[in-house]
Image (cartoon, rainbow, N blue to C red; front, top):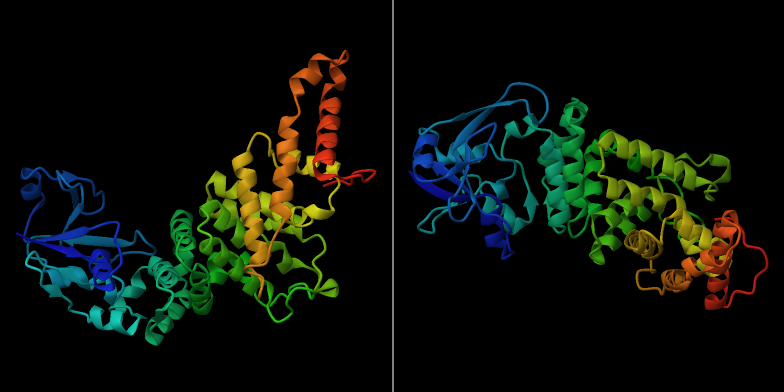
Length: 412
């Protein structure tokens, strides 16, 4: 029995990057042999075990054969006679198909080290086309290793896979899983760029793909379209190390601009409601988790109000807090402000421009929280009038905090 460290751990070691996981391949062993040594089985589709002490994954060397469409359309063969090279050959990219022996030797049958030096993402062989998830994985790796390029032959193969309908067999959960991982990389726009280049974006995220070519507002930067702006916004979310809900909201905040009537471009009047509708459709299709979905829809509907915070009357600000549930969900409201920061700075030359809206709204929110609703309720003889009195007190508190002497509040 021989044990090798494989895949990402070897790649990251050669790049001098930290690696969160260490995966191992075991050659010349059976499941029974590993069980006798105290390994715990975890694999459902093929033999994968956890080490009794380190809890790292150890998988028996295996081969795979295409037996149907999509990610699950494979049959696996794991046996003591499967070689390390045969196991490595089933992997996606040359840089992920290297192994390190226990004596320190590097096993690199597909020249992965060469491609690391050349900063190239290259598929191993024609079997790559059998698994459509690999399209998403390459796009995700491009977001992680943003200075790497996709080999021309690999990009051509990805385009053929999309044209042949392989991407259409991807299940929603796996699309979301890979999209979420890609959004959390250093430069998530590269993921969208690669998916668009191979045609997969139009199949998997048509609402995002439709943004490219749609003009931005002329008073911003007419030389970039809404798609490019969106890419700049998600890169701002990565630059600022925001969490996944903020990054997803950054990706989906302007979806409605793709449906702006041509006769009003480059203005986008009413795009917020269209963005909400398209966002709901996208989230339902990909089964997006609730925290990401809810923030994305809030961002789509209210980011314009946040940007106009300096011009909002006290009553409008209180209405914004009510509609976003800011009093009960202050952490989520902060995430909304974070996403708005990304939208504001995601324009050419604006990345370091001061943005005062969040500070103004947070001051107003603190003033609203300071209103003692219990005392107001106790002093009110008419229970039916309690909500309006509390609301009036909150508006007055905001007005005083922000020195807002305006007359009637407009609606948020």
